[in-house]
Image (cartoon, rainbow, N blue to C red; front, side, top):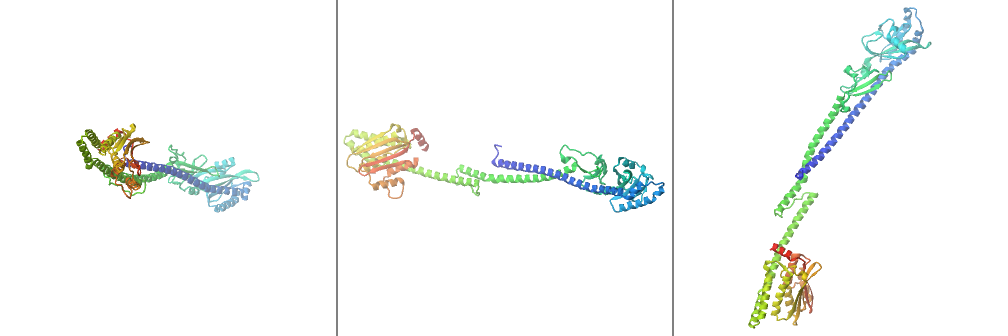
Length: 582
């Protein structure tokens, strides 16, 4: 990844962030959906079971209510106290009870049929069906209910257990009846409910393969919807190792009447299908979002990196030397600011290079003019003329001194093309010039050249003292008719090199001093004609900056002091720089 481009890195970062975000959201959505589906399935099933159980309890309560009404009827109580000698003696009482039960059955549509049986052999019915046995008291169900002295609920059967019906599936309850006078159970009430009534309440579908059914206390199915498979209803729910969504859901609610229960079953595969459908939708949406994120990441990476690529191309053009190349700034963000600063930097570099080129031109020109000033014709003419006159006068010693001084002056002035020389060499050049001028002016002035030994090896631009000495001779001491003195003093002051050229000549008027200062500053106003001093000042400022140059102090009638301020630089270092510059 270290060798990848920024665009590729940014694309991978954005894509990774998008993928992680989508995956986390998809995972959370799947978990939340799973819990919601499971909670909804359980809640819906519980509500449905509760409602169905309540409705079936109402049906069973109706059966129990009818039993209580019949057992408390005075005619029923009277019949149980009567002993019949012959079967025909029961006819009248049986007829009255049949009518009573028939009328009671008409007021309760939920009940299929009602029967009353007594120990004395009397049997009454609400419908005109024939009893299966002449003596019902011998029925095992009848004996069981009297023995247990409690209500017995019989599972659904095809037809009645006590009468010959037309094949209806019936749910039967048998309740013993106590004769109030003796306190003994001497009869039983049978109430039959058509199973279709119960089945209609179980038809509500929980799911495609989820059903409600009625089971007994042992867990055996009693009543179930027609489309259900009865052999599968009583099986234990399948438990999946992969979680609730893959296990069968089974919810039970026990009935209040007899201990039976309403059971709701939902196959685990249906719950899993709902979960899988939701996960499928989430995954499809996630894939779409990932594709969109991929496109957005690619686009964002391009938008973010393209300006940087354009800036890099512009930098390469600048690197090849095209300083007119500029970055296009069309944005106001950090990249736009970077482009603007880059353009500003290039403009600054271009300006500095133009200034440097201009400074180099000025420096070469000033050096050329300085060299010209040293070998100008009138100086050579005057020097050679002085040599001729001394030769004619037989002053051989003076001729030798002047010729040697002129030779050293020209040799140091040329300096084999070097731009810098040592302080020692520059002072020697100044001494040669002063020897020549002192011979010409017949020792009208005295001079002294001193230097701190610590600065004699320092490097200075060549030809910086001679113009100042010439200015002191022609504008200072030459104007004064008495003998003058000129002192050249080189030393170190703090962090710079100072060389003073002092004379006790005529000095300058305030007007001339102001004009010369204005010339050195380059400001508007009157200018002085001290070309040599201005030339030296400009050369030093071009080489070393505004901090260095020529300054002076002057008092009219007392003389002048010109000071050169230069940086401290080693001889070897400056020579190397001069060689590189040449």
